[in-house]
Image 1 (cartoon, rainbow, N blue to C red):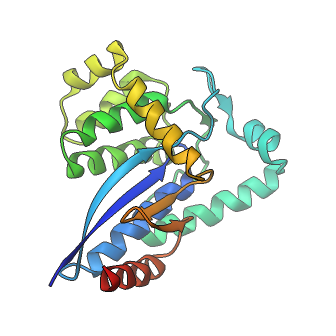
Image 2: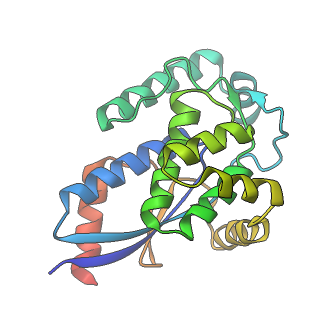
Image 3: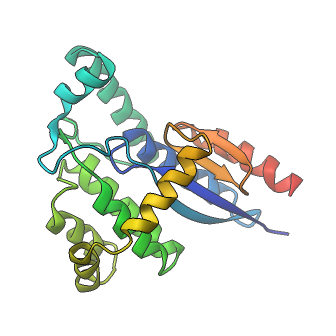
Length: 217
């Protein structure tokens, strides 16, 4: 008998480990097909909510935020790239280039989620690909709309969302909800509203955790 699990994937498009975590989760769910079915919802979290539309050079940003050196960042970037490659996600070898504000991306993800889980997942993947795979700006509406079209969603409807400011309140409320419940790092994967898995874990970790949760459900 297939067990259905509710999964809230709290993440930011700006987070490379979120791309790894999602690829790992997808791989685990594929292996558990027929045993576990997931109802996945992508929830918003902003790593840099105060970032202006002009963005910031990623090396400068990481040095200011974490105190890391360019050499450490290059080593971390290569380790992440290799992890992604093993999971089928291609990171741009030279990295993201700049860090951008991602709030509009979260508004579009909320919009896509109202149309269904598959649509939201498709848009999430296209946004991650545009940012981490191609180094494109998440502050550029045309980049966001290209991702919408690549996900098979309505570009004109998405443009109306961006221009009108729709879903601003809904996204802010979801962000505040998860922060008030102790989520301060991403990815954070919440299963059935009570089991928390944090970080870009490997597929085997997700597979074992989901099997255990499904058995207890």
